[in-house]
Length: 144
Image (tube, rainbow, N blue to C red; front, side):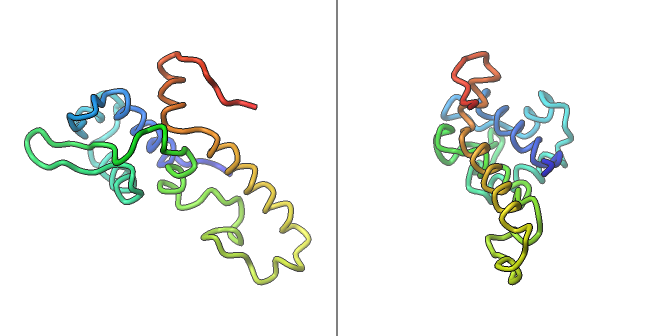
């Protein structure tokens, strides 16, 4: 499994918004672009996925930007990566929540399923708040 730049930038973007969000004032895409050194056009694609995933909402206007739809301690890293990547499944037969018709007789299926479960166990152990706290130097890592 490899997390693409889209997945990495989705996490970075949400961390940036969380670090610069006062709970009321929307964070503009231009501000994020300036801080992260990413093009506005690419950020628009990432943020569209995050809006579709239900993490952010858009506020229009001169002082518009993006706000979280729920507290960051309720947003799991696995949810963010799924929204950005589509899935973290290590093989096609596990994508989309459906199981391959050959899974019952496939000698490698249990291995792939265990890898998939392990990936989600790790990424869902962390919330966006955990990552924000890690970046700000607060302790409380959830590493096993």
